[in-house]
Length: 70
Image (tube, rainbow, N blue to C red):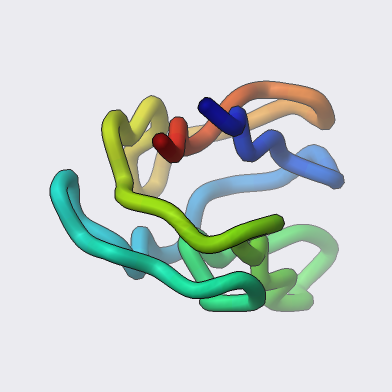
């Protein structure tokens, strides 16, 4: 299993994946807004979304796990 973490502190602007969805390496899973910039969080490898641990409009800190892939 791979845990996909936030690489910057900000607010979750959009969740681009759903539980059970198959993703490829590089697919955008979540978009974080920080300092008025949109920062995509990409899948580090191919897999299936097992859990989504964030929600739109909620704050996240650098290092927080956003999505779990299997």
